[in-house]
Length: 325
Ligand code: SF4
Image 1 (tube, rainbow, N blue to C red):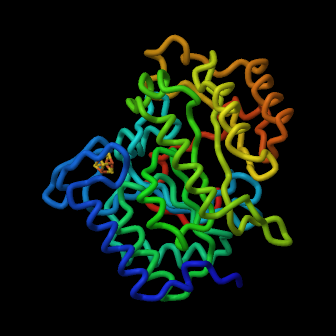
Image 2: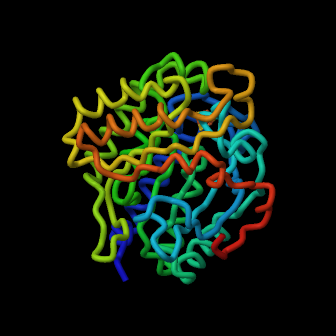
């Protein structure tokens, strides 16, 4: 079995990272919102997360990109609350409606080991940033008890470079969104007027840390960066501007894109006329063609994904099933 990079961290290195993350969480500045609230004293910031870990579900996910889900599934941990809270969130039950329950760090570590025993290819942390000190403590414990799977960091791409640096050697595969190529929709839908600059700096840092996506002989991801982009209707994801940035910043051969057609007008999207409908097939196909023509490889959803089959009902996952779906 492949030894994960974090299995080479010494106890002192783990503890130094955890101390640094604890300091960032004290008057919370784990994410770019830098709310400055004392979550350990019961205060809540923009994300709404408490100091304890709150998790919606843990299971073997078979719907991620092929090198992430493989045949055994991706050992996915969906953390409750979010630092972006988009009005159209496809996982709004956990990001906005707080679906989930408190987990002890020891329990999360045991669940990670259970996913490994079940045959999952990786540990896939979905929106973990607001819980990072507890998540890294759980990873340290699991690594000490035999966890060797690659760690996937699956996030909205709204991350501080300081936080990314503290995860060097712990995260193997960065899987960030690049949600918007312009700040106006980032402000309108995610209350993040600085999203573009923050997101671009974060993705550059992630790439510097892990490089291009690399897979083993059977096509399972081991290390690297893969960028997700969900195409919104009526140009609202500013995909043209995003593509222009990617072409200027990277060699297309180095970057794996996961282009998603699966947008559904969920949660509060009905209140925004321009994103009230799924993306038109012709619009999605034009974005897809532009990325492919620019030389970006990766994973391109078919417009069939617009049928809603990729959406998960988290209210059905109050306990953490460890079986595939
Ligand atoms: S993690 Fe939450 S509380 Fe901390 S800075 Fe970000 S939004 Fe604010």
